[in-house]
Image 1 (cartoon, chains in turn purple, cyan):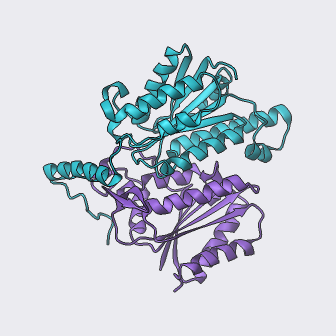
Image 2 (cartoon, chains in turn green, red; image 1 turned 90 degrees about the vertical axis):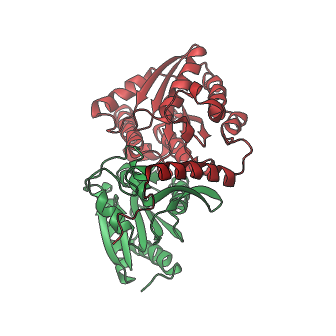
Image 3 (cartoon, one colour; image 1 turned 45 degrees about the vertical axis):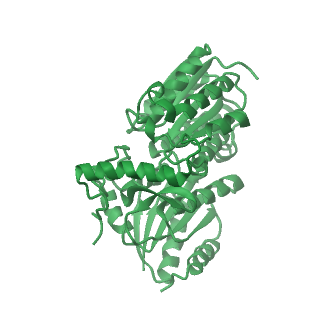
Length: 191
Length: 242
């Protein structure tokens, strides 16, 4: 079982690495092979909205950067993890730069999925989605907004299931470990 | 409520000739018809320079209202637009700390006590369902809270793909909802007050009138298939498979 972690956790230089370590340990203990893409250091250009990935170069983004590697891993992973400090109830912009480039993973035909218009996923393998967000202080509204966002992201990519962990800076790593572990176990994805 | 006379419209699309640009241009026109002074700031694909971001607080200080119009990219704002908000928030917090010596982190989360312009959002996407734009609107609202701007609501338009970067006046019936919605919104923005439930509902209507979504999907897909056949495109290619 393979997990692809797209991480902006390094934005928080103190708590970010703690959560990153717990995340990797927990997934590893559950038998996942883990690939971590640090979106802060990766070469990632912003999506230009050119639409080439739909009808000109179907399924392929014309921008030549590290996201080309991410696409290949996305097509093959069983678990996709978005790990990020939360800003305004959403992913950090550095992570968003990668997520904006997901359109090549969709075929440009609409379907009705979960009762809504959506694009058809291009690849048959559909990973579970785990959102791991960190907040500097407890903020119920940002927490709720982030959880809602992950549910939307999961619907967008056609994930069979999804879960969210929101950690507050300084929270014990044990609590974070338990929440991630519970999320993964609930899917029955353990090897 | 005070009358708004100076507005800053932010075009949050990274594209040069975009549907967001069409929306911003049309809204600017309606606001000018109502005798407002309007400035437009375009995010662009590279995002604003540090210098532009540092100049923004001074521009915003001279405005009564800021309107941010944005497409939806993967359920949220485009990354460059979200980055702009993060950078403006960081500058706002820095100015706040300078002024009052308050705790930087606390001010960033809970806002600076209502100082600043009124703030409106205009969010749009090709999908017709309002839920698909909810996250983007929520982001704008939480940004306003973080920087102490008065959030007065956001309108949300679906089915905007047919605009295709053209002036809204040229799009015809498929842009009727957007035109009418922006006219209603402009009249309320000029008062500096909250967008009414009636305006939000008017903007949230599907541009495809009473057509069921299954029919809308079949029509759009038929058009795509026609393009695919004509150009002999393998639209289901799997370039990243093993």
